[in-house]
Length: 227
Image (cartoon, rainbow, N blue to C red; front, top):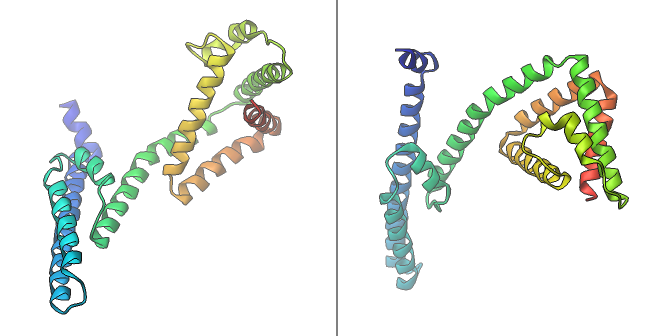
């Protein structure tokens, strides 16, 4: 009963059905576009505008595309994966699929954006002070490493280990930071320009509360780029 209430609350069933219909329409549009291309090629060959070899190449391409469409999974997730690597012949179908992907990305990112906004707004001066202190300690270690010395990672771990679970060495910490940076960049790449601007505005509003925090983060970025 609770699961049904959740479905009704978020209207997940309706949303999934809408995605299925849009995918069906995309594939229908692509199939119709393929047939138009075939008919156009036959007409152009009869008029002498293309050679029989050129028509044969298009027929072969059309057959391969139809075969790919026939092999697409029935469930939406499988179709989306398949269409992401599919080379569309019909520009309208391609545009429809791109618009669907953009819409899905925005729907998935919206809860993330709202959650981040709440997290940033709820940060107290004490939270920011601890973050600034942790970044300062991390930057000190990275400067020592860059100078050819061996930093006291154990002292950093004793103090901040709860922020980096499973990390047992400075090299592991740097690897984890690198993965997080790559994930953040991937997230940024998937956002629309408006969403990226919104995220940057939220981060800037946080930094306006504490310029020293912004300075430590800028120093961290510089230290990581020099490793």
